[in-house]
Image (cartoon, rainbow, N blue to C red):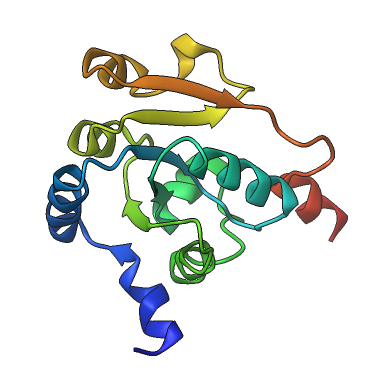
Length: 160
């Protein structure tokens, strides 16, 4: 199989998600979920995602669609379209799956995945993390990861 096909196969649609989740559950894999726009990938993203991956066996990223990013960040975003963003994320060795979602929050996706670990940046308080209550009610944990100072997509875009 070509490397590009391996990358593409990590980008899964909603109907494929159920099969993958059943497989990982059968193997007793600890699932980790995080989400975001991941518009302009930088060192901060890589460090954050690699630390998230270290918290379990499977890292699933919920990726905002282009329409969702526009609603959240404004008409000039995203810089990179959802295909480009999902391919870059899926190319990371420690990322197991990328799932696009069109809503403003990943709540419905979190309800479907029922991750063992939900990860967000430490700029969120525990009570502000969408889906934290769902994860905790299923026996999972919520973990926050500190950002690396000086790395931000918005700041990179301003510099450009």
